[in-house]
Amino acid sequence: MIDLHTHSIASDGSDSPARLVALAAGAGLSAFSLTDHDTLAGLAEAKTAAEAVGVRLVPGCELACEVPTGGMHVLVYFLDDGPGPLQDQLARLQTGRGVRNVGILRVLAEHGMDISVAEVMAEAGDGSVGRPHIAAIMVRKGYVESFSEAFDLWLATGRPAYLGRDRLTAEETISLAHASGAVAVLAHPTTLGLNRNKAGEFIAGLAEAGLDGLECEYGRYPPEERALWHALASELGLCPTGGSDYHGVYKPDLALGTGLGDLCVPDELLEELERRRPASAGGSDGLAGQGGRQGVAPG
Ligand code: AMP
Ligand code: ZN
Ligand code: FE
Ligand code: FE
Image (tube, rainbow, N blue to C red; front, side):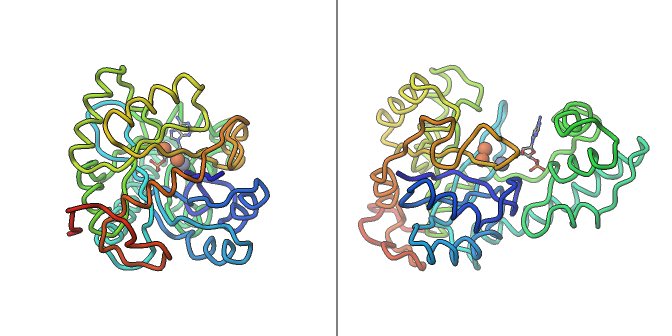
């Protein structure tokens, strides 16, 4: 069993990367992927811990992409920390986050909430800094009653302290992922907010653009929803994948590996995903370059 979707303190999870590895080993997983939002900052720690316990770590991240309606998250797998086309864009996105956070704090200050950039950085540590960290400080300082109130009143899309930020399009993400020796998978497709037909058309367009997989087995999806996405993946020739979207205490009902309790993502899906890696992909991963995408050169 594997889990291809987890978050650590390097973005908006509550557990350290090493702790995720311990949970993965405890759940009996053969492999798991750390997919923090917009950052690879947790990978080094996870890699060391994973090697020590003999769980395979699939390096990755999750990106929120530009989309006309709803929300679109793309998971990228086999993306190593270091220089590279997509990695360079992640650095640019981090800079954009910094600018946006300053803007959010300015709006909050106008409403009598005094939070400094230094406080936010201290809250976040290394990695992606964003609204969850600001929300946590708002709670601690008594400006709001709860984390969800911070979003509902101030930080959520359309609320007074909401600011947009730079995003890549899905097409850019897919081609940058391939150029970096990685693969791209559409996360939790229900979040697109499209009905089955519209989602089918939309995802067919992404498949045309080179999308590799579809996250059919998602922690929160009931069996019929998983079956629906499996059918679409098979129709479009996409690799079905799956994961819990574990965030530690921030999504307390979701366990790493098993999600709500019934998730069980088979090892074979990772093997199939790996066969979709760009053929000339190098990297530290042992199986890199075997099989591979036919006729598509990265770059
Ligand atoms: P950011 O990356 O700064 O845009 O923040 C996005 C993160 O904020 C998401 O990954 C969630 O963890 C959290 N988040 C977004 N919307 C909400 C919401 N309405 N309630 C609680 N948390 C949210
Ligand atoms: Zn998250
Ligand atoms: Fe997501
Ligand atoms: Fe996620």
